[in-house]
Image 1 (cartoon, rainbow, N blue to C red):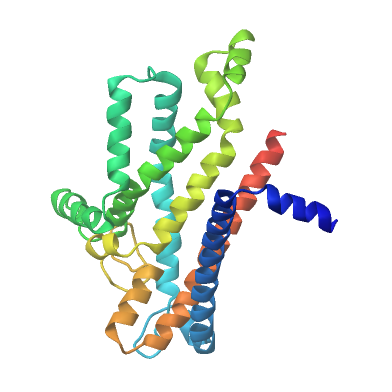
Image 2 (tube, rainbow, N blue to C red):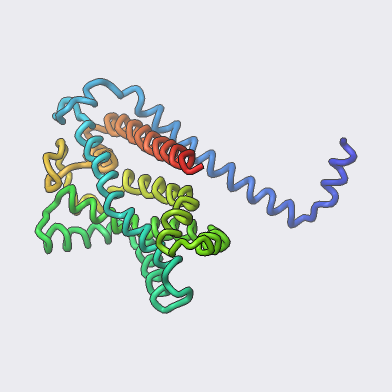
Length: 284
């Protein structure tokens, strides 16, 4: 056993060892930073979690996060309802209908890549000018949802597009050979087979929606209350943490809210994964 190990080590080139240590070093550093952040938030926040944080209404005495939690969940579902159909159908057009390598396809892909690299504060300014001012919606849940939908659209398009590309052409050819049209092939064969990749894009999009603050400062406002309608102002959990921390008066409550935010993100991701598993089981 030892002799085999020695022979294995001798066969390795110096460049192989360099790549080995670079890969493992990067992985260890990433995991260490992640664990440090999570442990730091938990240690600072858990001791300050109490029932007053979950009161139905926010007051200066309880610093309740319930209105922000309700707003966050509402923002996630409304934003996905707006962005998901546009993103998936755009990817279907690019992969299944558009001529590969055409000028229109290149323009759309360049546009999505450009949108993906724009800072969120720019999206916030655009949302304020277009949705809040020009359309007259004001700072509201609806303005924030449409702004976030534009932000996550490139992510959904790219992940769905790559997922559709990964499906072998033999699936399409077999469906066409059985007499199915292109539309039926896409919705009955291609989309179900690419569902895991689409769900991965949805999970990544949810993470960005929940963690966004800069764009929402200009579009949703900072009012901490339960939304009464889509045109009400509100405050998400991430924005609530930012506001409490910057005020400097409720730092402990900010850490406690950050713990709840962490739990919400993990819970939404777990729920999405569970839905994906159920969906794939029905397809089998």
